[in-house]
Length: 303
Image (tube, rainbow, N blue to C red; front, side):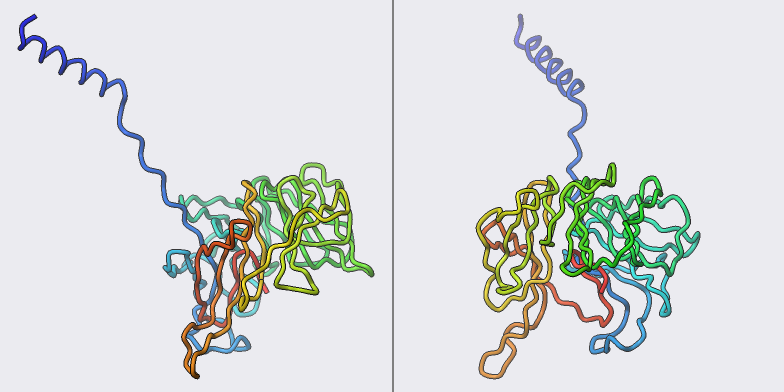
C-alpha cells in the first residue's frame, strides 16, 4: 500500500467514525430556581400598604423577572406560588383564566385541567409542580396533571409537607393535642400517624423539624417507630431558621434569616436570607435580600 493510499484510507475511516457517532450531545441546560415571589412595591413600603403589580420572581442568579401574564389583584389572594426548591411556579393566567404551572428552566407551561377561582388562592405547590393546595379549610389538594381534587377530612389544618417524590403528604390537624397524619397520595389512606410535624423525607415516615425548645437545632423523628431518627444538627449562631426542604437524594436544606450585623455602630452585613445544606456541613448555597413589602419565599409558601 502506497503512503498516499494509506492517508486516504485513514481519512475515510475517520470520516465514517464521525458520521456514525453523530453530532455531539447538547450541554444540559442550567437549572433555574426562584427564591421568592414579590410585588412591585418600592423599597421601604409597609406590608399594610396595597400590593403593587406586576408579580415578580427573584431568581437564584440575582435576576428579577416579571410575570406579565399572571393575574394581579389587590382584593384577592392571587400571589403565585413556588415549589419548595423554587424550580416551578404556579399562578392564575390572565388571558384565559387558567391556573398554570411553569417550569423555570425549560419555560414549559402546563395548564391545570378544570376551572379554579382566581381568588380561591392556592397557597402551596408540591415538588415538581405536581399538586396544588387550596388555602381554605379543610385543605383541598389538586392534581395539576389530571385536575382531580381531593379534600382532606373535615377539620382545621395548619401544616403540610409533601415527600420529594409526591408519594406522601403530611398534614397537621389543629386539635388538642395536635395530630400529624401522613397520607398516601395514590390511595389517600393514612399510612402513619403521630404528633410530630416537620419536613417529610422520601419514604413518608421521617420528618425533620426545628426543636421548639432550642430553635437553633434541627432534629429528626420517625413517625412509623415513634422514635428519634438521627443526631441533631445545629444552625449557625446569628441565623434564625425559617424552613426545611428535602430532595430525592436525601439532602436537607435549611432556610435561615439573618438580622443586620453591626460593627462600631455601622452595618457590616445587611439583613437577608440564606440557604444552607443542613446535612452537608451547613454549606452555604446562596444568600439574598428581599426589598418588597409583599413576598412569598420558596420553601415557606404564602404568609
